[in-house]
Structure formats: C-alpha cells, structure tokens
Amino acid sequence: MSPHLQQLQSIQAMLAAGHRCVELERHSLLLWGMVGGGLCAFTDLAINPDTFPDNTQRAIALFAWLTIWLGAMSWLDHRLTRRARRARAETLPFAQAQITRAWWMLLALGTLSTFAMFFHGGGVMIYALWTVLLGLGIFFFGLFSRPLVEWIGLATILLGVIGLASGMPMGGARWLTASCFAIGLPFAGWLTARADDSHTGRRALAVALWLAVVIAPALAVARYASSASLPTASLSLPAGSVVPLYIDMNSALVDIPAETSLPVRVTRATEVALTGGQPDGRYRFDDGPWHAVRDGVLYLRIDRIRPEIADGKPEIRMHSVFTFQGEQP
Figure 1 (cartoon, rainbow, N blue to C red):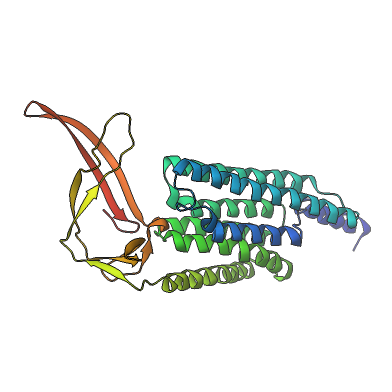
Figure 2 (figure 1 turned 60 degrees about the vertical axis):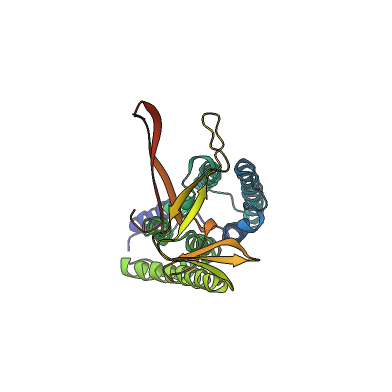
C-alpha cells in the first residue's frame, strides 16, 4: 500500500471519528437512569391528592420537585463529566457540549409540560411524553456517537407513542418509563460498548435485545402491583343500579346547590373497593382488572355546551363523554 493511500485512509478515519466524537460517561448513564426511574416510580408517594388536595398547589409542588431533582442532577453530571475528562487529559468535544444543552432543554420542556397538564388536561400523556423526550435525547447523542445509540433512541420514542396509542393504563406507562430510564440507559451504555453494530442485522438484534430487557421488567412490575392491590372488601353495583351524582362546581358564572343531585344509572356491572367501609378509589367493570382513580384510565370530556329557549324559558344542555381509556364512547 502506497504512503499516500495510507495517509488518505488515516485522514478518513480521523474525519469519521470526528463525526462520532460523543462518548457518554458511565456515571451519566447511571445517574440519569437512577434519577429518572426513581422520579417515575416514587413521585406519586410524595405528591398526590392526599398530600396536596388543591390542584394548583399540587402542580406547583410537582414543578418544584422536578426542578430540584433534575437541576441538581444536571449540575452534578456536568461537574463529574468535566472532572473525568480532566483526569484523562481530554477536552469535552464541542458537539457533546451542545447536545448536553439540548438534553437540558428537553428536561425543561418535560417539566413545564408536566406542570401545564394540571391546568389544561392531558395527564394520561405524561409518561408517554417523558418516554419520547428520553428517546429524543438518546437519539441526539447517537447522531454523534454510534449508530446503535440512534436506533435505541428511535425505539424509545416508538415505545412512548405505541404505549399511548394502545391505551396503556397510566400504571403500566409509569413503570415502562421508569424502566426506560433505570434499566434502559445503563443497559444501552453496556450494549453499545460490547455489541458489533457494523451491520444492520446485528444492530437490529441488539435493539431487539434492548427492548426485551426494558419491557419485560416493566410488565412484570405492573402486573405484580395490580395483583398486590386486590381489595379485601368491595361494593357491587349491578347494571341498572341508580346512584345519585352531586356536583361541586367552583364558578363565578353559575351556582349549583350542594343538595342537588342527578340520578346516574350504572350501565355495566361495577365493583368498588372499600377500606374502612368507604371507597378507596379502586374499581373494576364486569369482573375485569382492578384500576385506581389516579391511574388516569377514566376519561371525562365535556364537548358541547348549548343554551336554548324552551317554552319561553332559558335552559342549558350539555353533552359529555365519560368512559375509560381504550374503549370507544
């Protein structure tokens, strides 16, 4: 081989390495996996309707909670990364510094979106949103790292979208997002360091392995959590039962007397879990799986409010849809 050809090949290898210059530190994957998975799994224990009954206060508390944790981890990860690079007498590549800023922007976007959903609806989308944002972050890093990282990022995005489109209950979506962080990030680092992704087929097998390792624990934990919460006492409401509905409306426009009730007829056999003789928020339909109110499976939408005049008197007609996720109204 001629010296000129060797020089050209060396230059080509240097250029290729320059395009793929981003390398995430092991501590970054472990930190973000631990923090992201922990926030998904345990935030509801600290911030919930019992600890913060007021919706606005709960939204502010969650915003502060996420800001403190994610902000502290961003600072710590940045410091540890620079320290590790200095210890190896290396500099942080410009591309990696810019992508890190993009990652911080994705975290800020997720935090602000979570806060906004308390006031504008869409809470059932929250875990899908964080899964998609995580996938975008992985994909951005993959653009300047190995192609396998790009594919894992795309697979993470698809997990979030498919989970939302399939009507996955909020409990299952929570554990899937937690698994993507806690297991998916460290395992992605381990896999990219050892897997040969030079061919499309091998890359696809590596992504399939990553998906299996991430999805299986999430489904197992979701099933265990569902079976572990089986009630010891319940109230059965056969189809056709009538239950009074009392509406507590906070409005400066109209007022509904507190003693006014609407007769609501149950159209499906419903079972409500009891704790201490009172409903505890768990329910199921037609001997199906148990759900909790905070799982976000129930769906209420008021899509039409129309004032009318009947027999010379004004009246208001309202149309709404009340069902559970995954069932067509």
